[in-house]
Image (cartoon, rainbow, N blue to C red):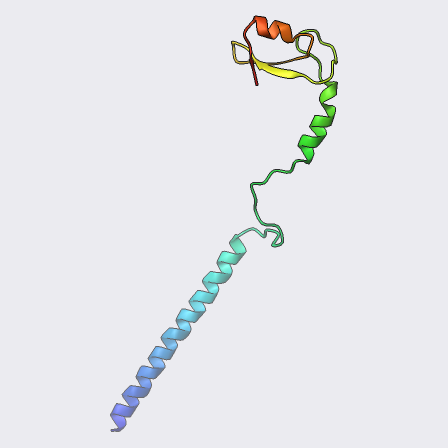
Length: 106
């Protein structure tokens, strides 16, 4: 009987040691993984949403752009694609030139 009790106690001890070693390995590997990852701000989530502030500012400065043909500041420009793939911005006065050359408005 004593040998059976001793074997039972040894089995429990072996299982306990194996679980203890497994827990230690888990904790160590978890700490290493956390150290390797760069710290990111936890309040800000990654997003693919683009802020419109830059677009609004650019839109306010649109009157400052020159016409590609007459080089005047004539307010809003209409942009056209040329045959070679380049883009030109033309004012209302130069719109006739774009129609004559069959440019496509963008």
